[in-house]
Length: 459
Image 1 (cartoon, one colour):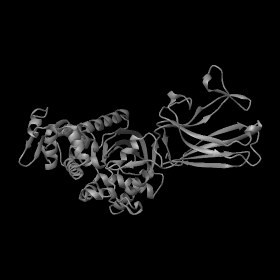
Image 2: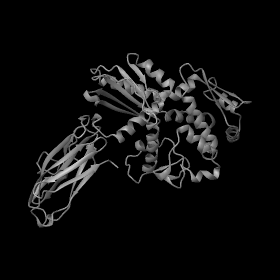
Image 3: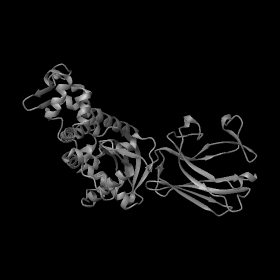
Image 4: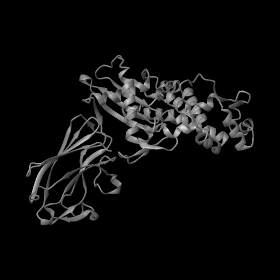
């Protein structure tokens, strides 16, 4: 990506991007951006906003929204040039879909309903268990063997060498399997010189004094580092073990659903070792490895964007509700939430549940609650009213403002008073409508006839 004009940019595939970036002269790096595993920002940040920025390999910043937009434009191009048909599962079939990405792993269970609609029966996020974790383990190995300072200098000063190292790791990931006896990595001359200068001893001696002395060899003449299968296996197992445990949890939770199929998609699913371990652990499941796993994920994302429709019945990942201020009940409501409003003693911030975590949601499904408010005091007649949508990871939160209920506001409708001010009493309906990728909040005031609306996209 160049730094001049993001409007006409398209990203390269991972290997192509590495090649393009490493071909640049050092003075050209400032004019280009190289982003690696930028999807992880979605999981690392507790609060994402439209102004959130990402740092590239050299620390330059770009708006995250621009980076994701450019990537999705590329995905669309790729998908539209590849729409292959595959044999369909029958209606009623239930299967596990495991999206094994670069950074994260997302696994869910679907049931195929009539008209090819999908119902989500279970959803789990395996967290940081994707292919980039293997890269991380490779790097940790080099740090343990040759020291952190040398590797930091490789990453920050020997940029070309570092990118060649990453490219080599990506290639090895797609060839390593349970039949692989050893894996060979060619060490760059500059890195070898750096390591031996930094540590003041030869690479052979460093290896002989490490815990890898019987598992790693170094051929000085050709600068080849030869890793035993057991060493490389550890790099993969830190993530594969998480994937397998997550699959076991899902099968246990869905033991009555008669699940017989497992679909593997995403870039990490292209690893032979990952496939072998999963098939070995779950011999009763028919494992379907989707051709070109990376493209399968792109296609699904793009098709949802091109044709928004009733694709799936999803399970809510949070409990959603509204905030109400009912009359205070002594002995029931906490004293710290007692307050006076328009002559009444109220309890502030009672969570009024609309959707419970784990509940199946249908596209365009509506959840509504009636409400009333009073504005008898003159000072309240012309105030603006804010209605918030709240969510919590707990199934039954009680108070929006109580810490243990873990509630946070994720959307708002602002109501302007009518020209003459609010009536003494207003009645109305508040609605939450489920979309493909967002919620819509609506609010109708009976006395004024006004209807308010807001789309909640969580950014």
